[in-house]
Image (cartoon, rainbow, N blue to C red):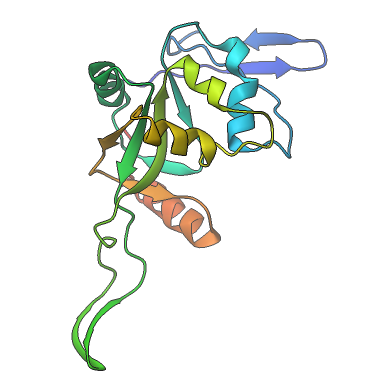
Length: 188
């Protein structure tokens, strides 16, 4: 069963007023990281709020998925490495052609990606990964992730369920239509 909590955050007074007490046992910290700070820099800025030695979840917030966070966390604990990335197959977007000497041998409308896997944007990380981030100008996807992979500290959790980006108006409209239909795969 889903629970909800209604609350008011007053930034001027530094107070939170609770209107309902039926809520998940979550602790949420909102951190102002600055408009110009890159993904790695944002992660570095939240380090002081993390529990030392405890793995934590990290996401960009621009993807929607039905990835099971418990299964993702269990996978992360099972391998003992510093980082787990969720690997997903991107949905097909255009009709695909197979050609032979200019002749179309096969046409497939919007096939499910090219069998390549991409960064799905959902991670479980050990706090020490933050040491790989130089500062605000560091992109998480560059030196930190590349270094983790090179050093054998990055494992992939393969997610074959629903995943979609929300990068464009087309993406937004598609996801909102799924939600409105009641058929959104991530809605539990």
